[in-house]
Length: 110
Image (cartoon, rainbow, N blue to C red; front, side):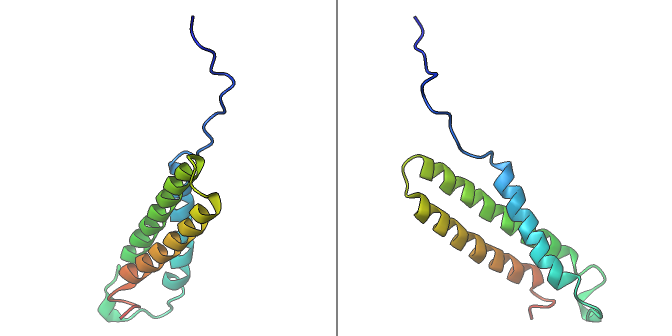
């Protein structure tokens, strides 16, 4: 006879894509304030200077979202939930800052 597992709680973790999309969206919003706020770009930057920061910063945000997913998964396995959220936010903001610096390097961050 097959055991009944209906009494076991379902796994409450998020799908990986959701926190990654939220992180990438936040990264895109933050970098948009810098990129689209430039009225007269320096001619030395080139015509398509804004493509690099608009790609790199959302990728960094998505990696921060993936780290949140990992911490959420570990907190459902016994890690302290408060510590996991604080560590996730810390890593997200450091990663987002590094993504902004890397994206704007050679243009606005010089």
